[in-house]
Image 1 (tube, rainbow, N blue to C red):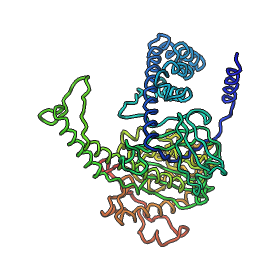
Image 2 (tube, rainbow, N blue to C red):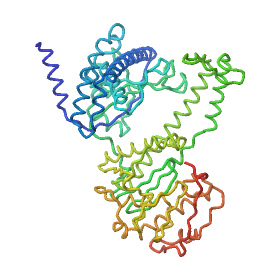
Image 3 (cartoon, rainbow, N blue to C red):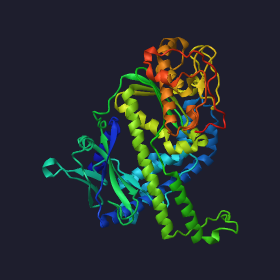
Length: 552
């Protein structure tokens, strides 16, 4: 074996033995001239074609593996025999070459000709890894199919494995100017570095694991920093360590219970003020403007493709043959305007998610919520979930809590059933979605359903998240007043004209609120201190909403 092969093998063994370390991202904009932009687009086009090729090869291997009779025999093994099933499937993957290492070998034969001039061997391996992960999701039943990257859709990102070959980021030392460059195929693309930004300064002090190039569409080719095709370029640096924590973002020490809905968020800390708010209430999308742009796009498409419509204005059915649509320049300009509005909406939502996450972390370091299926929410509350993205919020909350030394506990809904359980008598009574209040014959309630679920979550034991009546008796007397004050704040917002969803248990803003003798006068709860609040005199039937009136 040559010295070069021995050195490569030794380096590979060292990388495999290297322990996993925490990673965070830092994004820097790139200053790209027209020539560099053209070459970057060519590199990404070559990466797109190579990715599609290795994806097609992996798909063929997956189909052959599933067509093998041994596949059905392995599936027929009982799930209790985990070792036998794992050995059978592992043998099948090895026999048909369906593994990450096998695709790394296969991509060598595909990286030929002009593609090899654009994509180096290490980048080809990252593309093979990306294709394998997509195919493995189909193999495990987590996805139904893979998506090939079309020329119109493009290939918007590519990353490296490490920062010493091919696509890499180089930072000059202080005596040389502290400038940073992205190096790829002989091009040196400068990055804009704001050294006055504490986040940037903190990030560039850490070791760079690898770099990722991202191409993002701008509103038009005339936008600031955009190339002739209307794209901006940024570099994402994967850095070793933990992200910067700003001093203004405090971290609480209490335990916080949360109840997240498609459009609402209830928070009840063990120590502090409870809240019931509309999730991402400041997110005000211009839905009418987007809808007008959609109608305009449809009219432009009809004008440019009259042969695809029948006399009644319906699209003609062509069987399996795909229709070829002509797109005018005005249609493309309208589509860019609509995409620009949607990108601004995404950026605003991301900002609101970050702000709310820091507010939650400021209440406590231990966050307890119920584990929900956000994909199931998409089927029932598609509009609210698509607008507010609760699943993305929970993922951001998980990362932030972990980086600050806290913990996010997601308790299973089947065993806890917080919205159905009563701590007074320990019974579980299934409630319809239209019933937004909890009131039990044992004397607990009436209390808003989301706030009550958050209260139950706040005092759960993270080690054993099973609700117990004895655990809540000592906390309910002090927490009941806090929950009522939080609900009264929601009533006040409704009276002031704020649009609130029906899931809060309130009528629409500006309308007369439903009367309930179980509710206290508005002035009493706002003037009295928490310790002076008394139980309501006549806890009668709480106001309920019919199923037809309930929205997301």
